[in-house]
Length: 84
Image (cartoon, rainbow, N blue to C red; front, side, top):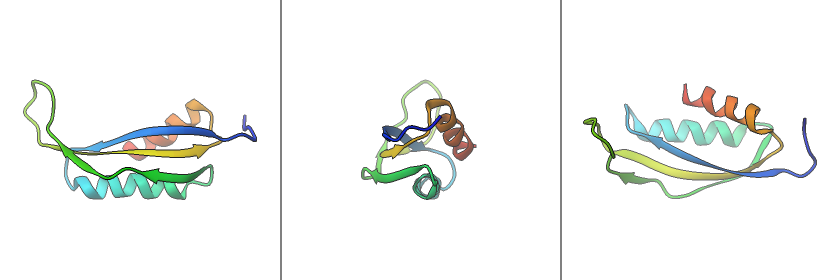
């Protein structure tokens, strides 16, 4: 169900595999072009060290803020599709 009052959403972006920058660029471009997502703003991309016991490479991270009329579960499906 849509509402006439868009919801503000914040999404954490991160990648530490393959072409990390291309993965983030793809996620940002896909979200920016979605017909039910607007006014996308993205923080600077920063590199951070991994946390945890598994040996892994550094992450590129950013935060994205946007407005959408998507409800939480449909938005989650969009995000999971992009992640996949």
